[in-house]
Length: 112
Length: 112
Figure 1 (cartoon, each protein chain N blue to C red):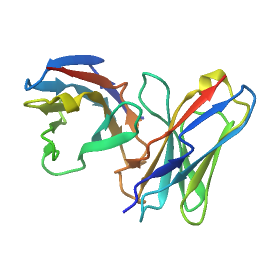
Figure 2: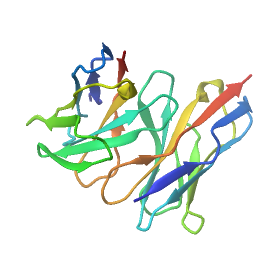
Figure 3: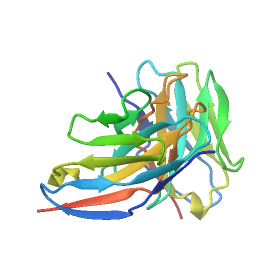
Figure 4: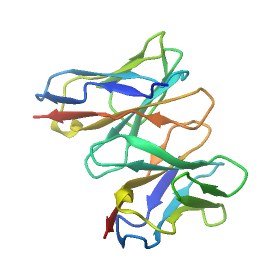
């Protein structure tokens, strides 16, 4: 039973560039959430997708956007990268209506 | 909105000694509570959860946590730690909106 997978593992980008991160949920899960974990901090909720729509959003600017595909996989896009966007980006999957979320290994984004 | 406070940022402990990690939450509605563990350069692993029912919950590797509604706490304990328990531990809370709010984390360092 495959768990949550994310790609790429690491990424280095320059300020002002755009980046796309990818996530495949755990088998059987239909809801994907994205979190940003800055160094030395707890994860912060970015947004959640279900039925290909953004259902909830945390306190992140519109530069952060996402998408969910019919197979439940998801992408996180960040435009106009800032140095402060450097972080570990975590994807979590769950079943709609259930509180347990299972996390992937994360994508480490470094903005220079 | 809900929030989590982890009262200890770092906990050094000797092998085979007990450990307690303190977590307090704030919420105006009923909550679901979780402890996640993060090993270096990895994602989050679900350690244990409180959804309803018995207020004492246990993991398969010897950790336990007790939900105390009157004190709004969900402290994590282990009677005897191993070197392999060295990691960062995050307390998290969610409500019916299913977006997790995390504490800042507690770094546990187990020494021989």
